[in-house]
Picture 1 (cartoon, rainbow, N blue to C red):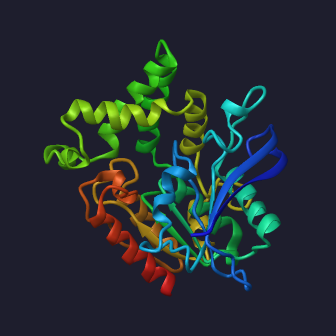
Picture 2 (tube, rainbow, N blue to C red; picture 1 turned 180 degrees about the horizontal axis):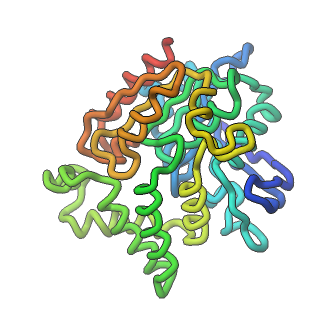
Length: 324
């Protein structure tokens, strides 16, 4: 599989909420080959706390994001520790919105690869929020999007969940204590009650529940910088495809403006990106299908690295969208 990594220098970026992100850079990785017509492009944005190495498992010939057919680009979000983030920034870090991210991702695609139109934007969680923004902001330049366990606007209950994470990180005596506590809170939200009732963590190689919490969830966040996670959390809380000069807060107008074919793919047991959010969005979309993942893996059903059954379900749905 052909891959390459690069850095796109965005320059000084004037931000949506005011201020400037100085010397902004997007770290990215590509998979496959851009064809002569430049019409085989899939953009695959990162999710909360994730870097491209965490999500690239899905870019394989055996999955729908097949690098033998498509040119897949993973742009790392601002604040994820690779692209411009508090941990690698000199001075006070400004507030960066999802809109700020996708505007610069669009520049990356046009200025580095000469790509004006993309076959699909595929996103899970915060990546799904970015996919929605791509479709709302760039019109016919986006043919398809997959909104996998995400929403057009962060819901109030989702915002409150994140408030718990934010205050935990800020109140902890040390950064490591905060990150470990964050992991334990997240473990109860990202997976369903049924997942724990059935002790499905045993199939992942953990000896008991405490082992799962320490080696999976605490370890997942301890490897990150607390400042980056707090900055990215702000981006998540304020994500809204209508919060811009185009739509002026009118979510129905923003949804109706989307020309892309949309696959809404929530998890039946997601505790914070709920299917009801997508059901409310669906009537406003011109060309959209809602297919619920029938899983007990909660939010993690949308990123089923260790769950072949859900991975096969995702592949089937995404392949059907790409065939349209």
